[in-house]
Length: 284
Image (cartoon, rainbow, N blue to C red):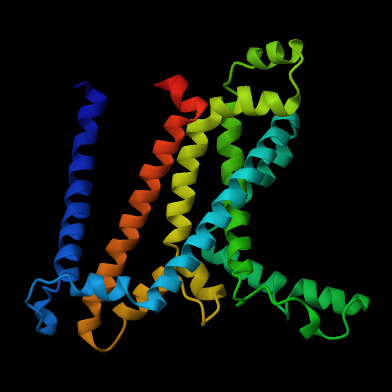
């Protein structure tokens, strides 16, 4: 073990103990052992109850919809933006693109609320121009059932993150392969799917994992901009945890562990699919 790895051992040890202790405690409570509320019997009833609950199933579907939509759109638009940044060498443009990365999600949520709500800046601007006769004619984008406002927040934050990360990889690639493909008569579309995409595939897989897991388990953005009739899994777990009745807390812990399990499944699927694709086969 070299010196750098040895210096990382205390950090990994401390964080590992904290994480595994929290997981063990959460698993213990989720299985029904919660003496604080008088529960001492180990059981899987909490998992069975939340997994068969129609409200939880709707929350799970809604969370997956938000996470997959935001993640795929962020990857698609972020990669396109990275190619634009690769061609445009303006330092100001690069600085502006990086700016949203540094903003907290809760600040961006408040910005989107002020911008696209029915009483927001865009609505009032259109009203002043006479394009709408009353503010209520502006589309409902905040607290809507489709979660458009939530997705806009994630896109504002994640597209620049994908673009900057992908740009760093593109700048290190051996672009000679692209020139060879052009000389052989390959179209731009063929070059992208056959040459560039396999080269950045690992990066895109990593970005998918990060973005999906974060958006799937996000709490503050759906809490501020979501519709009360459609809750995400994180909001459902929060509601269970904050109930006056302490006997609902094991269900909240069970729900959090189910969320973690879903994220783990998403990670394994993403890695398995990545290995099957050309970029994965090349690196294996």
